[in-house]
Image (cartoon, rainbow, N blue to C red; front, side):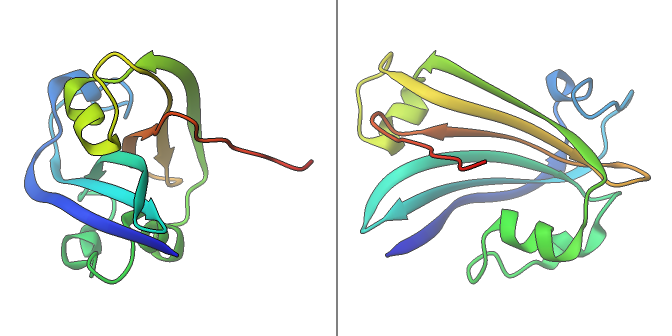
Length: 138
């Protein structure tokens, strides 16, 4: 069975190193959400997400204990465009601790940024546990 766990939910400014990805020139109020996704009580993905509250202020009060940040945004903040970057990378110590692997273990990583027609909405890093497989039918 699928579940998600909110590990951290904090308010602050979008960090300087993420501003370019969001096409922003200055920090904006944001919600930082770190989550763990599980299947059958085993972690398969660790998410580190920033949401630009200037673009979607209602996200401040989203019931993330009931719905994942991604599901809430899909339902409430339609996007017009974005970027997806997939890569193989060594698991950081933080990622490794959440994904039950050794630091440096190769993992699949997705970095995504989405935009509404008027503003950047969110940027995230989703790191998948070793052995995770993604299958797309086209």
